[in-house]
Length: 428
Image 1 (cartoon, rainbow, N blue to C red):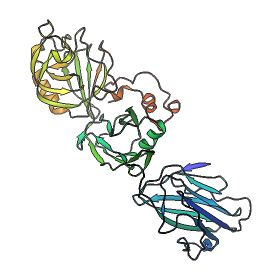
Image 2: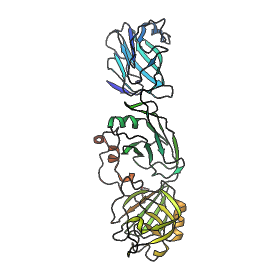
Image 3: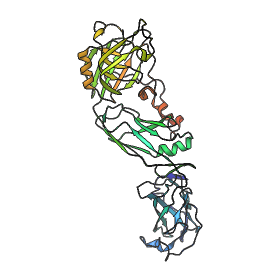
Image 4: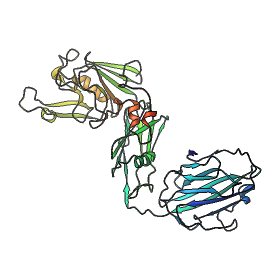
């Protein structure tokens, strides 16, 4: 059997003479009732061979079908052959299905939506290879389940850097892998220019989406859900969800070299500035790895107690900081540090942030936006965690990222292993 969304071009070759074709359309569980070509709603004749086709089925005009039962099309006459079946609802959602290699049967493989109107188009061929085609419309009933799965997409609409992942927050946890596949298949992402990517299940209620590499500069990214009315399990169906469109700005990537005490900023493939910096000192080393800018704060109060340093200790601090660009939720920033200007470019003396002069921090603050990238290299710190402390998504290899999808077999993913290649000026 073969599976396709619309099953167009399912093949027309045949080794024996075809004398006729009688089709049975069985949809979603009502009793089968016979009807002839004259009284069946499919009796229109769009092709010359149409008079050779008759439909019997439970999805007559005016009858409501059970959305929890599969849709099936059968060629009852052994001399008949189905060549193509498409089923689509009024909102444009196609039903995936499988067609037998001999053209004798087609059945749906993706769930149908409740309270939806479907149009089914079935094509056949006669003994001379001439095509026949019939069209059937039916409506599915209201869902028997009452709980609805809603999806909230993020970030908010706006313009972001090339490293910004998409997020999908579910209002109900989904743990079963097959049910996750139903959900994930309905979360559609399109970009202009087009790039391919994959959803990754962070936990039972949250997914992130990213391409293999960063988004193209100046792209437009759209995400929406086609889950509404779709059965996920016996107690849960998809609900309505608002779509989201975001814009991608310039390709801005900053690389902070902790060993060289220097931050280099690249924009659209060109180096635009080098800044002397200081990073985390021993015991407070800055995390290595790729981080996504989360936001910017013109003034922020930084207190050591918020990161586990006891007040009154030799390492305690309480500072009002300017031009703070946040890269982790735990308090790592790129910010102005006028108190350490003498060490910037020479030594690492901070408690984990990337510090620079007020002038340089103001420039950096005005240059970057949420979604831009800051990568720290050559630090003795641990690697930025993928989730839970900001967006560390890019620290997973593409193979590992794909393994977090319910639709991708991890063994068939990208065979590359190891940590993601560190950024260097030449490929930026």
